[in-house]
Amino acid sequence: MAELTLRPRKAEYLNVHIGEKTFKIPLAGALTIKELEPLNTAEGTLAFLQKYIDDEEIRDSLRRCDYDDITKAWIAESNKAAGKPVGEY
Image 1: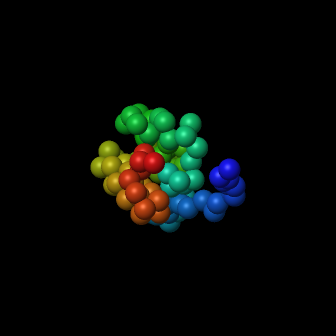
Image 2 (image 1 turned 90 degrees about the vertical axis):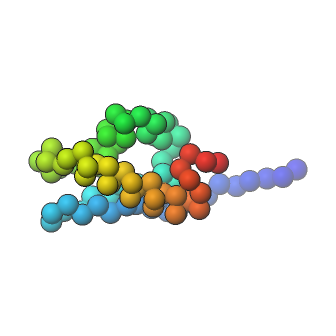
């Protein structure tokens, strides 16, 4: 019989520098399926990013294009780390 043993893996992050602060956003491979599900919507993605950009003043100063840039970088780095597009098994 075939076997598979899962071992803990080191989480990878996207470091987002805003002003003097750095925010660590976990890449897709570090998330559970339950955490990934809401990222299928714009609202879910925004809530995910805001969770990790935990400085309210900075978070509230970001424009839509800033969130778009962060999302694009997060997707690119998640794909790079996984070796395949986010959501593909």
